[in-house]
Length: 53
Image (cartoon, rainbow, N blue to C red; front, side, top):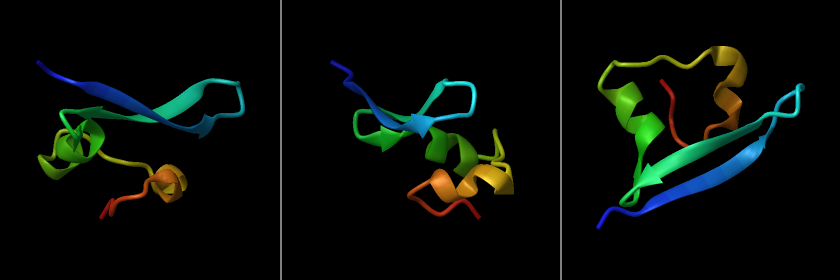
């Protein structure tokens, strides 16, 4: 069985929640970044608890 966990980081200026998604303990955003499928804007990189570069 897969376990999904959402770790809420905060809200943006429009009141939308931004968060990190984990599937079976793996950070999905970090995985996508390391595989080159996504990029992070420097403006928002300080919100990540893991290396973004």
